[in-house]
Image (cartoon, rainbow, N blue to C red):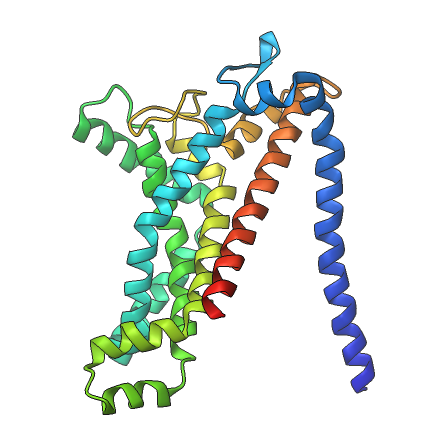
Length: 281
């Protein structure tokens, strides 16, 4: 029985690796032809996307995705970690249960609902607050992405903080540190691997989101500006894939965008893992 369970776990691990490899191979096979026809420089660094004129430059999409994800992470990490610290260390059990339930509810809300609320509440509010012609901007997208990644950062970080051995905190308190110093200088450092995993999940969610963003960002292929309508890598695929004809250069270019997005996410995950390992050493 033990050998059978071990074999089952090993099989599941191989299946997970196989899925990643198959996705990678499929994206490479589907995405390389368009990059070869258009040219890597024109495709990656071109600033004009006009599918009707066979102009496929995705630099605005890349920069928009970078700025949008960075903005959401910069806003979401402090809020998420402070909330997780409160839930794991400072909150009374009843209050912690209420907040934890709200966090779990946020995680279960479909992305299209976030987009709908953002489109009907946030977008008009941004338009009035900043006197814009349209509130569907990069700023609105950053706000929505921040709200969407918070449940992942909070849940995983709180779990990591609760797993820190009590002896670490008791030793810190015995040496004269107060609770706040102990939580941030001892508990948080001991849980940094789990917190980093939470950040990686948040970055992946922010980069891969499409439905909510397409409803609040304006979906216009502009160079990114905080109060301009923009288009992300994901929304570029969603907005044109439905009418791109099979075998056309436009459809191949959309697969190339998927390949760039996939490589981008893999690169960020690799960098974060390298940083974590370097700190642990």
